Image 1 (cartoon, helix red, strand yellow):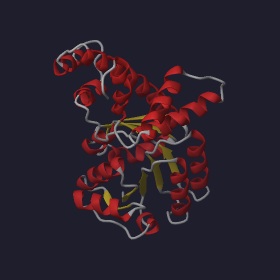
Image 2 (cartoon, one colour; image 1 turned 90 degrees about the vertical axis):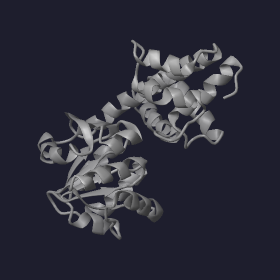
Image 3 (cartoon, helix red, strand yellow; image 1 turned 180 degrees about the horizontal axis):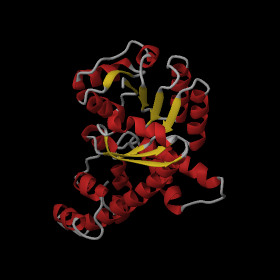
Length: 290
């Protein structure tokens, strides 16, 4: 099954690299040539000259873009290029409405669509340990399971198109809460003068252990916020969640508070840092420098 990846950012480049090494990737394409060339040089895969060339002969196209408008633009271009019976699997985080709109657009051309947002961050994309939550036709998903096994450790069918995005919204709300709790707790611990390497080690081994404290605890305490999952992207995702909640006239305190904090970080120039940069907001609560 010839596979193409469209979008070679932090997530797409890692997925394309793993697909290439597994023998599945035919070619890839990205809107900005510089990023495409960097990814191709790192992983060794071939680049197409255009999105139409990249998708015309593909049996499976995997998209990884940043926003709803990006996905809709990409879909408009590939809808006419791909052949009936082929499959588009989108790993982006977008609104349910956008996922359904794209599905309808592709269906008009006989092209199958699966919304398949992922969790695991840049590390997960590079190490093929992502978790994928998929909405769409189960039979279509089963056709491509062997290919998905080369980029993820777990693939779960959640229901019809849009179900993947709804599940990702649950994930992103939970990530916001974990980020708030971990950054506050570690800022408190550092203010107490504790050895934070030991704190992270013991806490990670107990009931409060989680991926975020284990993988980001030490770096945030050292004031390092190298991008894994960027503040600006999580902000975008939480705005999607906020819109979904507003449809039911509901506000969740964690979502609202995290959006305010992220907007403060973005205004201060930290939008491209990892979401652990929330630590910058927590340290001053104790009178300490961020």
